Length: 430
Image 1 (cartoon, helix red, strand yellow):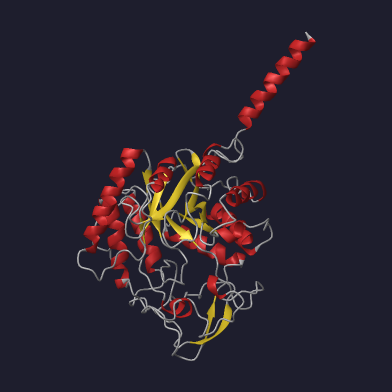
Image 2 (cartoon, helix red, strand yellow; image 1 turned 90 degrees about the vertical axis):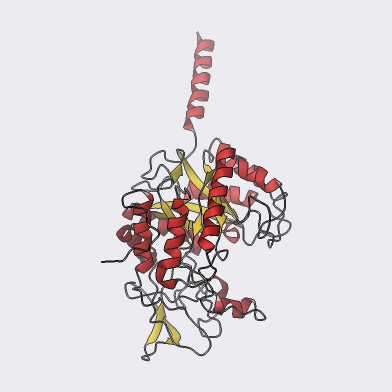
């Protein structure tokens, strides 16, 4: 009898362990990516006096935010921020120009409040490879992520983590650092089981984790020897931290393995093991080229066909425009880029991509980006009333209000869900 009791308890214990399962909450307001427009969220901007000892922009760490070190091409509209920081720039009327800091909780709260107000479904919070080195529990990026999780719950916006392999060294490092970091995020920051309303993005009933930077030829690492297979298997199948949907960020021409993509069929092997593929099309299309949206449409159609044949879901990326004049002066002094090299055209280029992707069959969309002012791709509130300078130059907003791209994104989300008719012509705001 005693032996039978031990056997029974042993079986019960094994059963309980089996059903303990992953640490992720099964509850979420967002059980599928389909029907959603998500944006990328950098969260890396720092005010000159915000206490983080970093300049404004990811590339300006430790530098004063002045004309010589300015890296941003779009100037944020800071009229609604609780905290702002003075810069050395001045507006045309002589006012001192000010900026926000992503490190302030009130900043993140305002951004998610805008998402709610305008109907932007949510964001992927970017997590760069440098964030995974060591236990950075009290780091500024972790604090920003914690604030984002709280704000997502508060405003009922979808949120997910996107690991960016940028910064991964040529040798001596691999994706095992991401695995350890994901464990810490799940255990310590409860990313997939946030307090309050559960809003972590799921797809096919599983929390989504994105890995961006797979297959680009300008990266120092070789995707064959950084443990991608092991990372994908861990995220999908680990009994405690797995059970996730994996999304891979790849080059535009991933399917044909040419142009901006490595010519290595192993990339297709990796993609087939994942669940969603996200091709990066920023800078690959332009309204200045005749019928470029036809090329974009054909690309999306063929990409979707490949994905259906291989059991992978597909999400196209769209962007309002592109500009990195100021950053290029610091990073590429021999190849300085013009201001607004891919013009926004008052939102027409953005809307053409959104509607073309939907016409081609896209069921979910990724917007690059929510707050990226370094490369002039931000959809959050930016202003044409930017500072004047003989050194640093900024894009204007074509006479549109600062919230124009937030409004367009909300309209596109309604169009994606068939709440309003699909139209190629940009809507006019009443």
